[in-house]
Length: 64
Image (cartoon, rainbow, N blue to C red; front, side, top):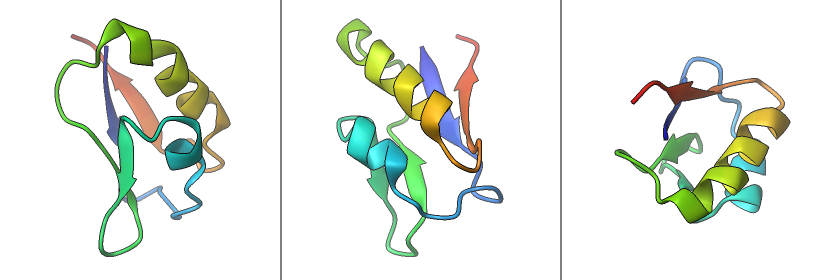
């Protein structure tokens, strides 16, 4: 599983960082960014929670 954050939709709420800090971080500009590349299997559930709970629906799962 891979994820990305649509920077045009992200409003910097930080919900993803709260739910899955191993995958998401905040940029210096205050927007969320996702760790590039394939996520470890043990983080997939938390990443999917972040996708489901993003207020702006800015997180997208990328087909591997």
